[in-house]
Image 1: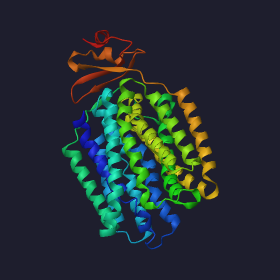
Image 2: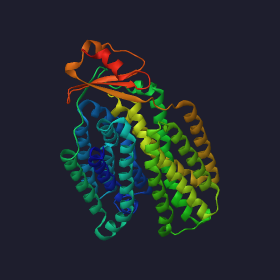
Image 3: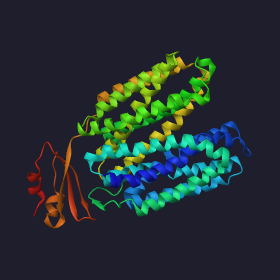
Image 4: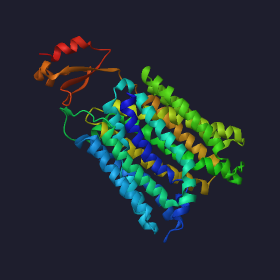
Length: 441
Protein backbone atom coordinates (compact mmCIF):
# COMPACT_ATOMS: atom_id res chain seq x y z
CA UNK A 1 0.00 0.00 0.00
CA UNK A 2 2.75 2.48 0.97
CA UNK A 3 4.58 1.96 -2.34
CA UNK A 4 1.40 2.86 -4.22
CA UNK A 5 0.62 5.94 -2.13
CA UNK A 6 4.13 7.39 -1.66
CA UNK A 7 4.70 8.66 -5.25
CA UNK A 8 1.25 10.26 -5.44
CA UNK A 9 1.67 11.78 -1.97
CA UNK A 10 5.03 13.17 -3.11
CA UNK A 11 3.32 14.93 -6.01
CA UNK A 12 0.76 16.44 -3.65
CA UNK A 13 3.60 17.42 -1.29
CA UNK A 14 5.52 19.22 -4.05
CA UNK A 15 2.43 21.02 -5.34
CA UNK A 16 1.31 22.22 -1.91
CA UNK A 17 4.87 23.17 -0.97
CA UNK A 18 4.95 25.47 -3.99
CA UNK A 19 1.65 27.05 -2.97
CA UNK A 20 2.44 27.38 0.73
CA UNK A 21 5.94 28.87 0.20
CA UNK A 22 4.46 32.14 -1.00
CA UNK A 23 1.77 32.56 1.68
CA UNK A 24 3.86 34.28 4.39
CA UNK A 25 5.06 37.02 2.00
CA UNK A 26 2.52 37.27 -0.83
CA UNK A 27 0.49 40.18 0.54
CA UNK A 28 3.61 42.28 1.23
CA UNK A 29 4.95 41.63 -2.27
CA UNK A 30 1.63 42.24 -4.03
CA UNK A 31 1.14 45.66 -2.42
CA UNK A 32 4.34 46.88 -4.12
CA UNK A 33 3.10 46.08 -7.64
CA UNK A 34 1.68 48.62 -10.05
CA UNK A 35 -2.05 49.17 -9.55
CA UNK A 36 -2.20 47.37 -6.22
CA UNK A 37 -4.86 48.11 -3.61
CA UNK A 38 -5.64 46.20 -0.40
CA UNK A 39 -8.87 44.93 -1.98
CA UNK A 40 -7.05 43.54 -5.05
CA UNK A 41 -4.39 42.01 -2.83
CA UNK A 42 -7.16 40.25 -0.92
CA UNK A 43 -8.52 38.85 -4.18
CA UNK A 44 -5.07 37.54 -5.09
CA UNK A 45 -4.61 35.81 -1.74
CA UNK A 46 -8.10 34.28 -1.72
CA UNK A 47 -8.62 33.90 -5.46
CA UNK A 48 -6.68 30.67 -5.56
CA UNK A 49 -9.31 28.96 -3.41
CA UNK A 50 -12.07 30.40 -5.60
CA UNK A 51 -10.71 28.93 -8.84
CA UNK A 52 -9.95 25.69 -7.04
CA UNK A 53 -13.63 25.52 -6.09
CA UNK A 54 -14.79 26.23 -9.63
CA UNK A 55 -12.60 23.60 -11.30
CA UNK A 56 -12.64 20.71 -8.81
CA UNK A 57 -15.83 19.20 -10.27
CA UNK A 58 -14.85 19.54 -13.96
CA UNK A 59 -11.47 17.94 -13.23
CA UNK A 60 -13.11 15.17 -11.22
CA UNK A 61 -15.55 14.37 -14.01
CA UNK A 62 -12.76 14.56 -16.60
CA UNK A 63 -10.72 12.03 -14.64
CA UNK A 64 -13.68 9.61 -14.58
CA UNK A 65 -13.85 9.79 -18.39
CA UNK A 66 -10.28 10.08 -19.70
CA UNK A 67 -8.32 8.70 -16.73
CA UNK A 68 -6.57 10.04 -13.63
CA UNK A 69 -3.03 10.45 -15.01
CA UNK A 70 -3.93 12.56 -18.10
CA UNK A 71 -6.11 14.78 -15.92
CA UNK A 72 -3.37 15.29 -13.31
CA UNK A 73 -0.91 16.08 -16.11
CA UNK A 74 -3.27 18.71 -17.52
CA UNK A 75 -3.71 20.29 -14.09
CA UNK A 76 0.04 20.39 -13.41
CA UNK A 77 0.68 22.06 -16.79
CA UNK A 78 -1.87 24.77 -15.95
CA UNK A 79 -0.28 25.17 -12.52
CA UNK A 80 3.17 25.48 -14.15
CA UNK A 81 1.97 28.19 -16.55
CA UNK A 82 0.33 30.11 -13.70
CA UNK A 83 3.54 29.96 -11.65
CA UNK A 84 5.63 31.34 -14.55
CA UNK A 85 3.16 34.20 -15.07
CA UNK A 86 3.34 35.03 -11.36
CA UNK A 87 7.15 34.96 -11.41
CA UNK A 88 7.41 37.55 -14.19
CA UNK A 89 4.41 39.74 -13.32
CA UNK A 90 5.09 43.45 -12.86
CA UNK A 91 1.55 44.64 -12.14
CA UNK A 92 -1.24 43.48 -9.89
CA UNK A 93 -3.51 42.26 -12.70
CA UNK A 94 -0.91 39.98 -14.27
CA UNK A 95 -0.22 38.48 -10.86
CA UNK A 96 -3.97 37.97 -10.43
CA UNK A 97 -4.14 36.04 -13.71
CA UNK A 98 -1.25 33.85 -12.60
CA UNK A 99 -2.82 33.11 -9.22
CA UNK A 100 -6.14 32.22 -10.79
CA UNK A 101 -4.35 29.84 -13.16
CA UNK A 102 -2.51 28.24 -10.26
CA UNK A 103 -5.84 27.50 -8.65
CA UNK A 104 -7.39 26.32 -11.93
CA UNK A 105 -5.04 23.32 -11.97
CA UNK A 106 -7.39 21.64 -9.51
CA UNK A 107 -6.04 18.10 -9.14
CA UNK A 108 -6.77 17.53 -5.45
CA UNK A 109 -9.96 15.52 -5.98
CA UNK A 110 -8.36 13.58 -8.85
CA UNK A 111 -5.37 12.59 -6.72
CA UNK A 112 -7.66 11.43 -3.93
CA UNK A 113 -9.78 9.46 -6.39
CA UNK A 114 -6.60 7.88 -7.74
CA UNK A 115 -5.66 6.72 -4.24
CA UNK A 116 -9.07 5.05 -3.96
CA UNK A 117 -8.40 3.35 -7.32
CA UNK A 118 -5.03 2.00 -6.24
CA UNK A 119 -5.68 1.08 -2.60
CA UNK A 120 -8.18 -1.41 -1.23
CA UNK A 121 -10.92 -0.03 1.01
CA UNK A 122 -9.50 -1.73 4.11
CA UNK A 123 -6.28 0.29 3.76
CA UNK A 124 -7.76 3.51 2.40
CA UNK A 125 -7.89 5.31 5.75
CA UNK A 126 -4.16 4.74 6.24
CA UNK A 127 -3.49 5.93 2.69
CA UNK A 128 -5.47 9.14 3.24
CA UNK A 129 -3.62 9.69 6.53
CA UNK A 130 -0.29 9.39 4.72
CA UNK A 131 -1.38 11.92 2.10
CA UNK A 132 -2.67 14.26 4.82
CA UNK A 133 0.63 13.96 6.64
CA UNK A 134 2.54 14.95 3.50
CA UNK A 135 0.34 18.05 3.14
CA UNK A 136 0.96 18.95 6.79
CA UNK A 137 4.73 18.55 6.29
CA UNK A 138 4.65 20.79 3.21
CA UNK A 139 2.87 23.48 5.22
CA UNK A 140 5.33 23.31 8.11
CA UNK A 141 8.34 23.41 5.77
CA UNK A 142 6.93 26.28 3.72
CA UNK A 143 6.23 28.49 6.73
CA UNK A 144 9.93 28.35 7.59
CA UNK A 145 11.45 28.51 4.11
CA UNK A 146 9.16 31.04 2.40
CA UNK A 147 10.28 34.21 4.22
CA UNK A 148 13.95 33.17 4.05
CA UNK A 149 13.87 32.59 0.28
CA UNK A 150 11.91 35.80 -0.36
CA UNK A 151 14.21 37.98 1.73
CA UNK A 152 17.39 36.61 0.14
CA UNK A 153 16.37 35.97 -3.47
CA UNK A 154 13.06 37.75 -4.02
CA UNK A 155 9.48 36.62 -4.35
CA UNK A 156 9.88 35.82 -8.04
CA UNK A 157 12.32 33.08 -7.09
CA UNK A 158 9.60 31.40 -5.03
CA UNK A 159 7.27 31.31 -8.03
CA UNK A 160 10.09 29.91 -10.20
CA UNK A 161 10.73 27.24 -7.56
CA UNK A 162 7.02 26.47 -7.67
CA UNK A 163 7.21 25.99 -11.44
CA UNK A 164 10.21 23.65 -11.04
CA UNK A 165 8.28 21.65 -8.43
CA UNK A 166 5.43 21.28 -10.93
CA UNK A 167 7.87 19.82 -13.49
CA UNK A 168 9.26 17.41 -10.88
CA UNK A 169 5.69 16.35 -10.13
CA UNK A 170 5.10 15.54 -13.79
CA UNK A 171 8.26 13.43 -13.86
CA UNK A 172 7.12 11.53 -10.76
CA UNK A 173 3.67 11.04 -12.26
CA UNK A 174 4.99 9.12 -15.26
CA UNK A 175 7.95 7.35 -13.65
CA UNK A 176 6.75 6.34 -10.18
CA UNK A 177 2.96 6.51 -9.92
CA UNK A 178 1.26 3.21 -10.88
CA UNK A 179 -1.34 3.38 -13.62
CA UNK A 180 -4.81 2.66 -12.20
CA UNK A 181 -6.62 -0.27 -13.82
CA UNK A 182 -8.98 0.46 -16.72
CA UNK A 183 -12.51 0.02 -15.43
CA UNK A 184 -15.68 -0.71 -17.45
CA UNK A 185 -19.01 -0.40 -15.66
CA UNK A 186 -22.66 -0.73 -16.66
CA UNK A 187 -23.80 2.67 -15.45
CA UNK A 188 -24.59 5.72 -17.56
CA UNK A 189 -21.55 7.46 -19.01
CA UNK A 190 -22.06 10.66 -17.03
CA UNK A 191 -21.90 10.82 -13.24
CA UNK A 192 -24.72 13.30 -12.73
CA UNK A 193 -24.43 15.80 -9.91
CA UNK A 194 -28.08 15.24 -8.94
CA UNK A 195 -27.47 11.50 -8.45
CA UNK A 196 -24.62 12.29 -6.06
CA UNK A 197 -26.62 14.85 -4.07
CA UNK A 198 -29.56 12.45 -3.79
CA UNK A 199 -27.33 9.97 -1.97
CA UNK A 200 -27.83 10.91 1.71
CA UNK A 201 -24.45 9.64 2.85
CA UNK A 202 -22.58 11.43 0.08
CA UNK A 203 -24.52 14.63 0.78
CA UNK A 204 -23.69 14.37 4.48
CA UNK A 205 -19.99 13.90 3.73
CA UNK A 206 -20.06 16.97 1.46
CA UNK A 207 -21.59 18.97 4.34
CA UNK A 208 -18.93 17.69 6.74
CA UNK A 209 -16.08 18.50 4.36
CA UNK A 210 -17.51 21.97 3.64
CA UNK A 211 -17.91 23.02 7.26
CA UNK A 212 -14.56 21.51 8.26
CA UNK A 213 -12.67 23.54 5.64
CA UNK A 214 -14.66 26.73 6.22
CA UNK A 215 -13.98 26.63 9.95
CA UNK A 216 -10.31 25.91 9.25
CA UNK A 217 -10.01 29.25 7.43
CA UNK A 218 -11.89 31.02 10.20
CA UNK A 219 -9.40 29.61 12.70
CA UNK A 220 -6.36 30.70 10.68
CA UNK A 221 -7.78 34.22 10.46
CA UNK A 222 -8.65 34.44 14.15
CA UNK A 223 -5.62 32.84 15.81
CA UNK A 224 -2.90 35.35 14.78
CA UNK A 225 -5.20 38.38 15.04
CA UNK A 226 -6.49 37.53 18.51
CA UNK A 227 -3.03 36.73 19.85
CA UNK A 228 -1.14 39.72 18.41
CA UNK A 229 -3.65 42.60 18.63
CA UNK A 230 -3.46 44.28 22.09
CA UNK A 231 -7.22 44.94 22.25
CA UNK A 232 -7.86 41.22 22.67
CA UNK A 233 -5.75 41.02 25.81
CA UNK A 234 -2.81 38.80 24.75
CA UNK A 235 -0.45 41.16 22.85
CA UNK A 236 1.91 38.48 21.58
CA UNK A 237 4.71 39.38 19.22
CA UNK A 238 4.38 37.94 15.70
CA UNK A 239 7.66 36.11 16.25
CA UNK A 240 6.03 34.22 19.15
CA UNK A 241 3.23 32.63 17.10
CA UNK A 242 5.27 29.47 16.59
CA UNK A 243 4.60 28.69 20.26
CA UNK A 244 0.93 28.06 19.45
CA UNK A 245 1.31 26.56 15.96
CA UNK A 246 4.10 24.09 16.72
CA UNK A 247 2.42 22.14 19.55
CA UNK A 248 -0.92 22.30 17.74
CA UNK A 249 0.51 20.91 14.51
CA UNK A 250 2.39 18.15 16.35
CA UNK A 251 -0.72 17.15 18.31
CA UNK A 252 -2.83 17.17 15.13
CA UNK A 253 -0.40 14.98 13.19
CA UNK A 254 -0.11 12.54 16.11
CA UNK A 255 -3.91 12.26 16.38
CA UNK A 256 -4.49 11.82 12.64
CA UNK A 257 -3.04 8.33 12.16
CA UNK A 258 -4.76 6.54 15.07
CA UNK A 259 -8.12 8.18 14.29
CA UNK A 260 -7.96 7.08 10.66
CA UNK A 261 -6.87 3.53 11.47
CA UNK A 262 -9.31 3.12 14.37
CA UNK A 263 -12.19 4.65 12.41
CA UNK A 264 -11.58 2.31 9.49
CA UNK A 265 -10.77 -0.85 11.44
CA UNK A 266 -13.74 -0.56 13.81
CA UNK A 267 -15.93 0.95 11.06
CA UNK A 268 -16.94 3.88 13.27
CA UNK A 269 -16.13 7.01 11.21
CA UNK A 270 -19.39 8.63 12.37
CA UNK A 271 -18.24 8.49 15.98
CA UNK A 272 -14.84 9.94 15.04
CA UNK A 273 -16.59 12.80 13.22
CA UNK A 274 -18.80 13.53 16.22
CA UNK A 275 -15.78 13.67 18.55
CA UNK A 276 -14.03 16.01 16.11
CA UNK A 277 -17.03 18.34 15.92
CA UNK A 278 -17.18 18.52 19.73
CA UNK A 279 -13.49 19.46 19.74
CA UNK A 280 -14.25 22.21 17.21
CA UNK A 281 -16.99 23.53 19.51
CA UNK A 282 -14.75 23.56 22.59
CA UNK A 283 -11.94 25.17 20.61
CA UNK A 284 -13.94 28.16 19.34
CA UNK A 285 -15.57 28.72 22.73
CA UNK A 286 -12.12 28.84 24.32
CA UNK A 287 -10.70 31.18 21.66
CA UNK A 288 -13.73 33.43 22.00
CA UNK A 289 -13.93 33.77 25.77
CA UNK A 290 -10.63 32.95 27.50
CA UNK A 291 -8.25 35.60 28.79
CA UNK A 292 -5.44 33.13 29.49
CA UNK A 293 -2.73 32.56 26.87
CA UNK A 294 -2.14 28.97 27.97
CA UNK A 295 -5.85 28.16 27.77
CA UNK A 296 -6.01 29.81 24.33
CA UNK A 297 -3.14 27.60 23.15
CA UNK A 298 -5.05 24.57 24.48
CA UNK A 299 -8.05 25.68 22.42
CA UNK A 300 -5.93 25.86 19.28
CA UNK A 301 -4.56 22.38 20.01
CA UNK A 302 -8.13 21.05 20.35
CA UNK A 303 -8.94 22.53 16.95
CA UNK A 304 -5.94 20.96 15.22
CA UNK A 305 -6.65 17.57 16.81
CA UNK A 306 -10.29 17.69 15.70
CA UNK A 307 -9.40 18.82 12.20
CA UNK A 308 -6.72 16.18 11.67
CA UNK A 309 -8.81 13.35 13.13
CA UNK A 310 -11.49 14.19 10.59
CA UNK A 311 -9.37 14.92 7.50
CA UNK A 312 -8.31 11.44 6.24
CA UNK A 313 -11.68 9.86 7.00
CA UNK A 314 -13.59 12.52 5.02
CA UNK A 315 -11.93 11.60 1.73
CA UNK A 316 -12.03 7.88 2.49
CA UNK A 317 -15.76 7.87 3.28
CA UNK A 318 -16.65 9.78 0.12
CA UNK A 319 -14.74 7.26 -1.99
CA UNK A 320 -16.52 4.42 -0.15
CA UNK A 321 -20.02 5.78 -0.54
CA UNK A 322 -19.54 6.71 -4.23
CA UNK A 323 -19.86 4.08 -6.93
CA UNK A 324 -16.85 3.38 -9.12
CA UNK A 325 -17.97 5.77 -11.88
CA UNK A 326 -18.79 8.57 -9.39
CA UNK A 327 -15.61 8.81 -7.34
CA UNK A 328 -13.93 11.62 -9.24
CA UNK A 329 -17.15 13.64 -9.56
CA UNK A 330 -18.18 13.10 -5.92
CA UNK A 331 -14.77 14.17 -4.64
CA UNK A 332 -14.86 17.09 -7.07
CA UNK A 333 -18.23 18.32 -5.75
CA UNK A 334 -17.05 17.91 -2.18
CA UNK A 335 -13.77 19.73 -2.74
CA UNK A 336 -15.46 22.52 -4.73
CA UNK A 337 -17.85 23.13 -1.87
CA UNK A 338 -14.97 23.02 0.60
CA UNK A 339 -12.93 25.59 -1.35
CA UNK A 340 -15.91 27.92 -1.58
CA UNK A 341 -16.26 27.60 2.20
CA UNK A 342 -12.52 28.29 2.56
CA UNK A 343 -12.92 31.54 0.63
CA UNK A 344 -16.11 32.58 2.44
CA UNK A 345 -14.96 31.52 5.93
CA UNK A 346 -11.86 33.67 5.89
CA UNK A 347 -13.74 36.65 4.46
CA UNK A 348 -16.52 36.33 7.05
CA UNK A 349 -14.11 36.06 9.98
CA UNK A 350 -12.09 39.09 8.92
CA UNK A 351 -15.11 41.29 8.20
CA UNK A 352 -16.95 40.29 11.38
CA UNK A 353 -14.03 41.15 13.63
CA UNK A 354 -14.17 44.66 12.18
CA UNK A 355 -17.81 45.20 13.17
CA UNK A 356 -18.18 43.19 16.38
CA UNK A 357 -16.23 41.39 19.10
CA UNK A 358 -14.70 37.95 19.42
CA UNK A 359 -17.23 36.79 22.01
CA UNK A 360 -20.15 37.37 19.64
CA UNK A 361 -18.29 35.72 16.76
CA UNK A 362 -17.49 32.69 18.93
CA UNK A 363 -21.16 32.45 19.91
CA UNK A 364 -22.30 32.51 16.27
CA UNK A 365 -19.73 29.88 15.31
CA UNK A 366 -20.75 27.72 18.28
CA UNK A 367 -24.40 27.76 17.17
CA UNK A 368 -23.34 26.67 13.68
CA UNK A 369 -21.19 23.87 15.11
CA UNK A 370 -23.98 22.63 17.40
CA UNK A 371 -26.35 22.48 14.41
CA UNK A 372 -23.64 20.60 12.51
CA UNK A 373 -23.28 18.17 15.42
CA UNK A 374 -27.03 17.49 15.53
CA UNK A 375 -27.22 17.10 11.73
CA UNK A 376 -24.36 14.60 11.65
CA UNK A 377 -25.65 12.57 14.58
CA UNK A 378 -29.08 12.23 12.97
CA UNK A 379 -28.24 11.92 9.27
CA UNK A 380 -24.90 10.18 8.81
CA UNK A 381 -24.57 6.40 8.84
CA UNK A 382 -21.45 4.30 9.18
CA UNK A 383 -20.71 2.51 5.91
CA UNK A 384 -21.62 -1.12 5.50
CA UNK A 385 -18.69 -3.51 5.51
CA UNK A 386 -18.04 -4.55 1.94
CA UNK A 387 -15.86 -7.22 0.40
CA UNK A 388 -14.88 -7.73 -3.22
CA UNK A 389 -15.19 -10.89 -5.27
CA UNK A 390 -12.57 -11.10 -8.03
CA UNK A 391 -13.22 -13.58 -10.83
CA UNK A 392 -11.30 -14.09 -14.10
CA UNK A 393 -13.50 -13.07 -17.03
CA UNK A 394 -13.26 -16.51 -18.64
CA UNK A 395 -14.95 -17.98 -15.54
CA UNK A 396 -17.85 -15.51 -15.56
CA UNK A 397 -21.25 -15.91 -17.22
CA UNK A 398 -21.80 -12.33 -18.41
CA UNK A 399 -25.54 -12.83 -18.75
CA UNK A 400 -25.77 -13.82 -15.09
CA UNK A 401 -23.49 -10.94 -14.09
CA UNK A 402 -25.48 -8.34 -16.03
CA UNK A 403 -28.74 -9.48 -14.41
CA UNK A 404 -27.27 -9.75 -10.91
CA UNK A 405 -29.56 -7.93 -8.52
CA UNK A 406 -29.61 -8.03 -4.73
CA UNK A 407 -29.86 -5.65 -1.80
CA UNK A 408 -26.52 -7.08 -0.72
CA UNK A 409 -24.71 -6.14 -3.97
CA UNK A 410 -23.35 -2.59 -3.98
CA UNK A 411 -22.04 -2.67 -7.58
CA UNK A 412 -20.02 -4.67 -10.06
CA UNK A 413 -17.60 -3.69 -12.80
CA UNK A 414 -14.98 -5.06 -15.18
CA UNK A 415 -11.25 -4.51 -14.59
CA UNK A 416 -10.14 -4.71 -18.21
CA UNK A 417 -6.47 -4.21 -17.38
CA UNK A 418 -6.29 -7.38 -15.28
CA UNK A 419 -9.12 -9.29 -16.99
CA UNK A 420 -11.29 -9.50 -13.88
CA UNK A 421 -14.94 -9.14 -12.99
CA UNK A 422 -15.26 -7.40 -9.64
CA UNK A 423 -18.38 -7.60 -7.45
CA UNK A 424 -18.64 -5.39 -4.36
CA UNK A 425 -20.97 -6.96 -1.80
CA UNK A 426 -22.05 -6.69 1.85
CA UNK A 427 -19.83 -9.24 3.53
CA UNK A 428 -22.11 -9.73 6.56
CA UNK A 429 -25.14 -10.59 4.39
CA UNK A 430 -23.91 -12.94 1.70
CA UNK A 431 -21.19 -15.60 1.50
CA UNK A 432 -18.50 -15.43 -1.16
CA UNK A 433 -19.21 -18.97 -2.42
CA UNK A 434 -22.91 -18.21 -2.71
CA UNK A 435 -22.18 -15.09 -4.71
CA UNK A 436 -19.69 -16.91 -6.91
CA UNK A 437 -22.32 -19.52 -7.79
CA UNK A 438 -24.64 -16.76 -8.98
CA UNK A 439 -22.23 -15.45 -11.64
CA UNK A 440 -19.86 -18.31 -12.53
CA UNK A 441 -20.19 -20.39 -15.68
